[in-house]
Amino acid sequence: MAPGHRFFLMIKENFLLLINFGTMVWYRKIVEDIIIVRILIRGGMSPFDNFSATKEILEDTFGGNAGNMVYLYSIFRILMTEGTEIDLDYYRPERGQTSSREIDEINEKYDLYIIPLADAFRSSFVPSLKRLTNFVEKLKIRVVVIGSGMKIPMGEDVTEAHSYDKEVKRFAKAVLKRSAIFGVRGENTEKYLKNLGFSGSEVRAIGCPSLYFHGSQLPLRSVPQDFGKQSKLIVTNSMITSAEIHEFMRKITDSFDNYVFVPQLRRELNELYYGMPYRAKGYPYPINISDKIFRAGKARFFLNVPTWIEHNSKADLSVGPRLHGNIASMLGGTPSLILMKDGRMQELVDFHNLTHISMNDLKPDTDLIDIVHKSDFNSINSVHEANFRNFVDFLKENRVASIYDDADHAENTPFDKRIKEIEFNDPVIPYSACDMEEIIKRCNEFFPAQEKYINGLHRDSAYKRAYERFMPGFITDEEGWGHKFIMKRAGYKE
Image 1 (spheres, rainbow, N blue to C red):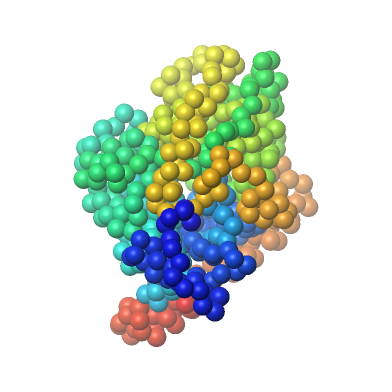
Image 2 (image 1 turned 45 degrees about the horizontal axis):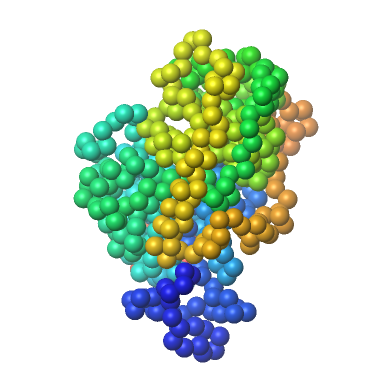
C-alpha cells in the first residue's frame, strides 16, 4: 500500500490488525513478511485461464467481446504487486447471482472491489447496472471504478437527458461512498457525470488502462518506409458500423494479400470454430463461413491475450474500427490506424491522441497507403507519459497499490512470471479452412458439450419453475434453505 496509508497496531498469531485513516479495521494474514492484499475484480476470464474454444463459446467467458480480455489483462498486471491476490467475480453481481451470505463473505475476505467498465453508460446495460449497484450498496470494502464510458454517436451533447441518467447517478453515488475518485475514460464522460451533479474532485478522466500495460513508454515501432501492397496487416472490423468503413475495409482485403482478419465477438467465434452462420444478412462483412476471407484461412480468433499480442507484433500495421483489437497490436509494438466510428471511440482517440481517421472522412477513393504515409503513428507519445502519471495518481488517491507506485517501468513482475509458466492455446482458424480431421475433432468436442450444457440449463430452469409454482416464497427468501438449494442446484457456489 502507498506509504502513510496504514499504521500497525498489533501482530498476533501471524495476523496483522490494520487501520486505514481510523475508519476501516480488518485482519490480514502475513506470509513471509508480505501483507496479503485481496482484490475482487469484475470480469469473466482471468489472464491465467487457458480455456478451450468450446468453453469460451458455451460460457461466454470474455463477456461477448474478446476485447474485454485485453482490458483485464493490463489491469491484472498493473495491480498484481508482491502479496496481492486477485479473484474474479465472473459477472455474478450484475447477473443477480450473489446471495446475502456471499456478500458477507466478500466483505470479510476482500479488501477492495475493482470495477473495470467500458461503455457501460448505455440503455442496454441498465438492467445489469441496477444489479451491480444493488451489490455495491451492500459492500463494506473499498470500491474503485476504472475507466467507464458512454456509448454515444459522435458529436452528441452529453449534457442532454439520457434514459439511463437515474441509474448512472445511483451507481456513481454508491461507488463514491467507498472510494475517493470515480475513473472515467475521457472528457465526455467526465462532463456527463459533472452534469449529473458530481464535482470535479469526484470524477477524473484516466483513459483506457490497457494502454498503461508497459508503463510510461510504449514500445511502438515505426511503419516501414516502403509500406505498400506487400506489407503485413492486422485487420479488425465490426459488423455494426458505417457503410463507409465496410467499403474501406473490404477494399483493403481485396487489394492486400498479406493480411489477417481478427474478429472479436462470441458469435464470430461460433462461426469460425464450428461453422455456425450469422442470422443477419446483407452486410458487407464476413458473416458466412464461405466468405473468401475464411476459405483462404486469413482469419484468427484469439482465445487469450499472450498469443494475440505475440501474433500481432509481427505485423507492419494494424487497421480497423476495433479499439482493443488495435491496442493488442500496439502492446506488441505494431503501429495502429483506428477508424473512428462513434463518440465512444472518439473520447479515447482524443484523450490518448491515437492515430486515426474518422468514418466521415472516408471517401470512395480513399487509399490506405496514402493515409499511412501522411500519418504520424507516434502521436500518442506526446501525451502518454502525462496520461500514465495521471492514472497512477488516480490509483494512489484511491489507495490502490500498483507495480508503478515507485517506477515508470516494470519487468519480471509477479504477473509476468505467472504468464511465462503457461503454454496458451493457439488461435482458432476458420472452419472452412480446416482439413477433415480437424473438423471432426471440433464436432466431437463441441456438440456433446453443447448438449450437456443446454440440458443443464433446462434442468435448472425446470427446478426453478416448479418451486416457484408449487411453493411460493420457497426460493424468493434468499436466507431460506429453498433459495440455497436452488442456487446450489443451478451451479452457484455458497
